[in-house]
Amino acid sequence: MRILGIDPGLQVCGYACLDSDGDTETIVEAGVLRTSSDSPLAGKLDQIGEDIETLLERFRPDVVAVEELYSHYAHPRTAILMGHARGVILQKSAAAHLEVKSYAATRIKKSLTGNGRASKEQMQRTMQTILALPEVPKPADVADAMAVALCCANALSRAVV
Image (cartoon, rainbow, N blue to C red; front, side, top):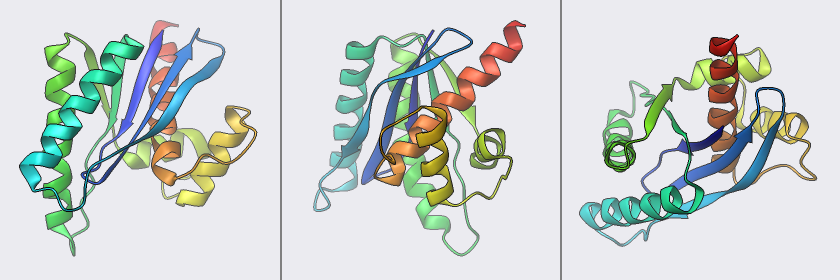
């Protein structure tokens, strides 16, 4: 099974393509998509849409796993802006007739570290260890995308058993 994990963001969007046979997970590719900081919102969303289409065509995933929105009460505007990016990702995945799975950040962290409030650094080190990577994945958006893909792989393998 091929899973495309996405950590949605308006400026930086992490992605990780993961192959899983139910026992072993291998990262095919991981990185970030960036939008121009001086682009208007509509331009950023268009760029995200184009980049997601490119990833879907290149990797041909069976499932797209996306981190759910998290909103801190002091920063609701951030969640609203991220929601725009997440909406584009969901729409492009649906247009490609792909199954989409959403996971809360606390669930992802707890399933991989045992701590639903794990730090960014802890998630990066955990991804390095679990996936036997030669170095810590950077930036943190890449590790987050790997984590959402791995959480999805684990959830799907448990559902099959």
